[in-house]
Image 1 (cartoon, helix red, strand yellow):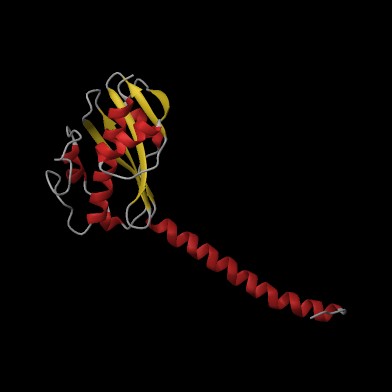
Image 2: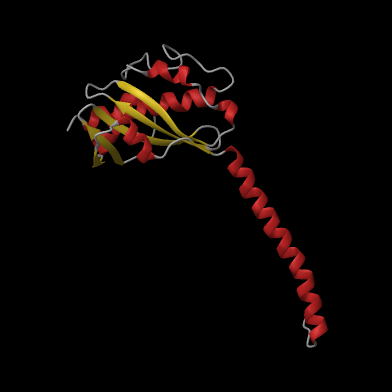
Length: 187
């Protein structure tokens, strides 16, 4: 609709302004709703400072196709990560893994001892509803575990009632990180 006079243009603007205001309100509401569940407990820098108070060296590795296939085979998982960043200190290594739990992401830091065992797992961010967040007591069962058939929800890792996808996500991340640690070796 073309309008040449000022009053007609004014009417068009008046109709568009409420639509714009409504769209902005909907967008703001959606962003706020997403942030209600998003929880960041620690940044990577804070987690590293806690794990390695004297500092750690950042190492970047690019997996060869053979290393990727070996890590997939050892972990029993399919993944495509080719660039691996880890942090090395005399007491061990830190790996960060971000994965989807149900529909939203979670980031964990997995500390690995030089001999390939899990020293500790920290959840850095968890975007799923709080009722799916594993308790620290459940996560503690990973301490000292190595990559073997017992590192499984069907074996030595207790399932998590009401949060089975969270349990699977952390177990899979642990298997993946330990397999990557094995193919990268200690450097």
